Length: 53
Image (cartoon, rainbow, N blue to C red; front, side, top):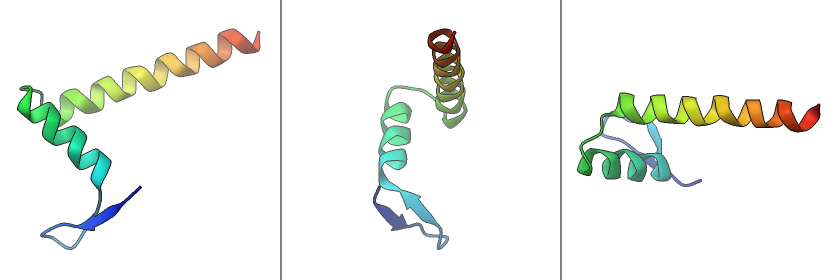
């Protein structure tokens, strides 16, 4: 994970920035991306629970 400084002196993950920029180019908002990541995260939890049983 590479970090870069933003204009507001925050460290930013370059992979996250690239993901957001690609999503914007495709017409998605930051919130859309966050919702998609949450859905994927929740579905992976379900997969882990299914395999643990």
